[in-house]
Length: 442
Image (cartoon, rainbow, N blue to C red):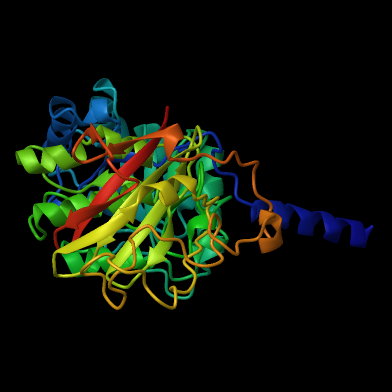
């Protein structure tokens, strides 16, 4: 009898450590706005309500953005019962009032806390109050929780986030759970059942070097991402002034290719036409929000020049050419080859050909003359590739071979279809720029 009792206790403990997230949420990457990148601790009731108004008046709601998220500094203490207390000076009507206002606009409301004893700005964290806070957030009307990792000291990340995930489930209100532990404990390996998105790196800053460094760290993570479980390379910096318009277009494009959450972080009430044109590019957003939920993989890496391919639903695909260098490039792109390749969520860069063909593409570092779209030996669709994809050790869905004649090619930033006189063409690329094409089935 004692052994049976011990077994039951062990089973209950194991069950309690299994996450119970709301599976029906975030089937496409969440889209919205977060206060931190622009306003940091300077948050208030008025700011959040104005952001909700601006999300509608700017057209962002119509483009798919829906979450208004308050980051750190809304909370100041806990009362004698342990309840979290919001800043009464900055939020005089309380959090439920703000949430109700956001909901009245047809939007969703998000809030912030941390798994440790304090937040990153030394406000009260959630440690030891997970179930109490979850009930409070449910009463507020919270739809999205960003949960940081500050103040965590010796805590185990998986256990800590699982505990909060279960607390949210127990509270009963469906809440998207955004895990923000900076990739320190490889959350992509364990967070799928726990949360809906997880940060893969430290914080982004409003600079080209920060953004492109974070992007590079996503290369090997595609297999962990999909509907309801997203790699999160951090919030957008578009419109905050630290990068050029071209670099912001690249930033936005790369995040969309990665199927990343799109959380704007700028001042929605003071957007330039250029910022609006980026954040409201519905064709680019459609690539991010594609129902298949595949993250792009790097098809070709020539150092400063890369080709990324993202599989889309309906046998379509998006192709992103990336010029990371500080120099303008002219690259030769083989659209016929790009039409034939298939990815299934895996990268297949492969070694470079031993000898480049004559002519070729000026400006490609270390490989002048190599067509931008040329397949590496052994890559699917290239000579020497296995006839049976299963030989590569991965079961793959049934594939129907399509060719260039099956597609029309859409330039996503020019908002027009390409007219190809030949199957290959030179593409001019300014420094730090992208060209994004969607292969649309005819």
